[in-house]
Length: 529
Figure 1 (cartoon, rainbow, N blue to C red):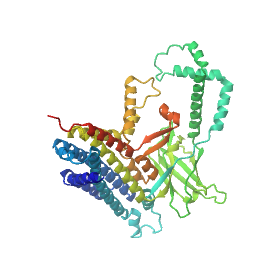
Figure 2 (tube, rainbow, N blue to C red):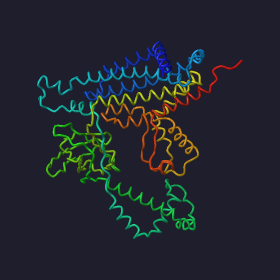
Figure 3 (cartoon, rainbow, N blue to C red):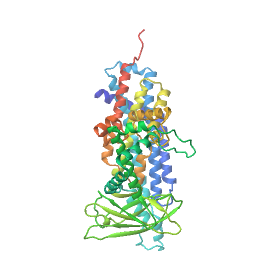
Figure 4 (tube, rainbow, N blue to C red):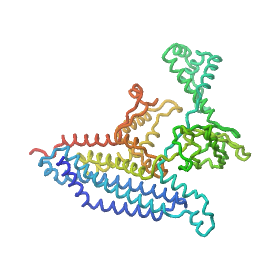
């Protein structure tokens, strides 16, 4: 490893002497300082800190990604174009040591820049945290009582400078209702007629446009032939059961005016009475109504027999925004459950049925501190820099500087926008059979996503701004690999094993370095004359 360290040290010193690192360092310092002094957010202290964290971390991430790409490609292609590689190759230095040393030298510098940048961002955020809120400034001249609860200070301490886990409600129990309706449907319609109707729907779905010409009549002989296929009968019954469960679930999610629904959350950590408060975050969606404001009541109950503690909140919220309120920690039961009862209040001016979906009402509980979350966010950003540096080495060993930069920028953009591109190229379900172009674009994106990591542009920043916990397990999965349950849209191999293996960005990084080493190893540096 002595040779690798020699190349690493030389690469680090060579990068420090370049002008590009000075330019990017100045731009980074100016951006962080400007955001810290000039950005005010929504006028609250919480908004100012969140805006500072969002802009400073995003700018730091973007600039460091660019400087990593340009530095790595410049170092590798410069050695080849200026013939320095002949001197290096004549030494007792193997090709893999050169590739690894160049990559680690750039990463040593960009990692140092990341640590310095995140250190400055953290200190600036702590400095802004000590500023006074509006209530604290009004309390000095005696305009506000000193014992008044300051919601802004409460939000800063428990929503920003915290690491909170998100809990979704437990699934609704619909199995008893499903069995009852399925048995009634079979008794009323008949099993064969039920399957026959599903086959007809599969062969000839109803037209989306009412003005479309009527479809040709179905071949009943074909329907009857398919009806006696055991494998197809089983598949049709699975589709019928799936659709029926969705209908029951959607009906349970609708809450009419004057009605209520109860949600239960499990897995929370019991807190002492003076512990940090919880937060309920929700967004109400009216069903088939144009109402812009909804009035509701929320009752959070501790169901322990010896407790009986409850909290009631009356709210009036816009349907276009996400709202939240704090919850007393005494509402958590001894076994870590929280019971939330939502009541759709009767309002003559705003009568609307509300659809409650699991992702619309979540509970957030503090599980860690801001500092640990900040470190884990920095580790994820460092991982992105590692992958981009490896991709730059891969392209730099056989392409010129402009072409290699263009290739890396395409990789960077595709990785950042992978979620959006994947959603945009999904095969249509309800608009008829997909076209050849839709098949091509969908499977092309699937193939690209199998190779490139998903470097969501704002995922890490959003977690810091929102105070959302970044668990160590997620960091470890991103560095190595993750095992996830196989979904219905997974390929046959994953469905066979019941689990889907997703390579982390760390393994993809060393895979890119390995490919770059193989290309560089087979490349002729000079022709024989």
